[in-house]
Image (cartoon, rainbow, N blue to C red; front, side, top):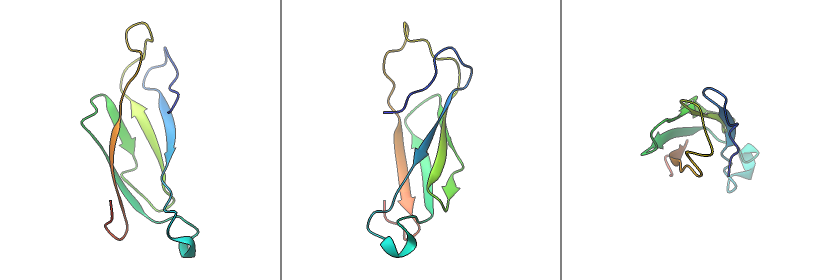
Length: 82
């Protein structure tokens, strides 16, 4: 789970993708990532050679109105494997 700060406009969290089956590249390979079916969320950049991305919620979180949120990613590595 990621922790996003309550009461902050457009809170963000760091997300890292790791390719564990590719030690020749220090387990990092370029990834293409999209957020799908998760309104109010975006991810940037959409492509990263380090596997590090920033997940952003558009708006202000309020735990009395929203207890849990779900984010769905579509991630593909440089070889085209999801």
